[in-house]
Image (tube, rainbow, N blue to C red; front, side):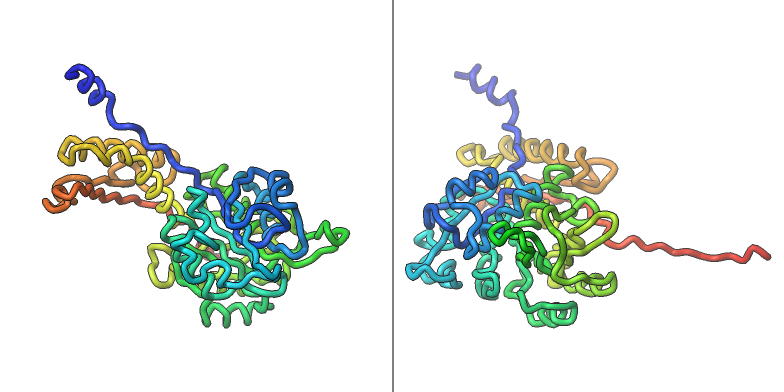
Amino acid sequence: MTDLLSVNESAGPPPIEGVPTSIAAFAGRAAQGPVNDPVTVKGFRDFEQTFGGLWSESTLSYAVRDFFANGGAEAIILRLNRADGGALREADFTGPGMEDAKNGLYALEKAGLFNLLCIPPHEVSRDIEPGLVGAAAQYCEKKRAFLVVDAPINWVDAGTAQSGMAGGVGTTSPNAAIYFPRLIEPNPLRRNQTEAFAPCGAVAGVMARTDARRGVWKMPAGQEATLTGVTGLSILLTDAESGALNVLGLNCLRAMRPGGFLVWGGRTLGGRQNPDWTYIPIRRLVLFVEESVARGTQWAVFEPNGAPLWAQLRESVSTFLMGLWRQGAFQGSKPSDAFFVKCDAETMTQQDIDNGIVNMVIGIAAVKPAEFVIIRIQQRSLSR
């Protein structure tokens, strides 16, 4: 027995594996399929087989199409419906008792891990309610997920968008971001005539694509953030309009040469309240680290709560963060400048130790995006 313990201790703590970062959950109406029972699909063909594909009454179906068209690889579909067959309402997602019963939006508890949440408009011409936006953002905070919000349909220009942001959109959560304007795309159900569609699915796809190519710490915006399948935008914004809206926390979609149609903003809705959470990649990187560490250190639950365990936890978490630093996730020319991990007598009281509670404090120096590049030009007279 002594020899066995010696071998196990010498092996070191189990390594922490990073969790996936771009599993997108979609909640809304679909033509068919199970209700209040989330299903994982790994392509639009899977969605067609289970949920019936595109349906003119289902904005969710078009959002899922756009997610996979723009680089998404895995989605969780939560089909909800009303007894009368009509369009959904806020109460169908977050009504009384639903959280305890794991119904409505909270049926996603049955699905396990998801990182992005999209709730497309209830109908083509009807937005989701601000109360639902707030409840969904609060749920995302609980789940370490990120909500992708569609701007209201009555934002028809930069002025109405600016007024709308001033009035509030239902949440100021750092776990949410809003996008404007709508996408112009062909509708196969109407002989490919172009129509306006909510952007949440396409934006979630761009996030997934960016995560896969560059990492969750890369801003899902800019020249690489092309919107596939898009033939236009419902509004064409100028640089000045986009800049003014961006400062308010509204992420714009732009027509830019030579890139085409691009995501051109990456701010959360919580940045004005807490500047630490201004940027989407910083918030999502922290959510990724939190979830990965929480899952990757579950082995410690039944270990003796003392110095040997604390040392193992520090080693395990530091090794994980070192790997991220080497990939470029953090600032700093050396690890000590990039992150720290504390788990010792200073992070726990004796009462914590007696109650079996282990507290870790982790700090990371996230890389902030170069959102604005300032160029100064000075002209000098050649005659001097």
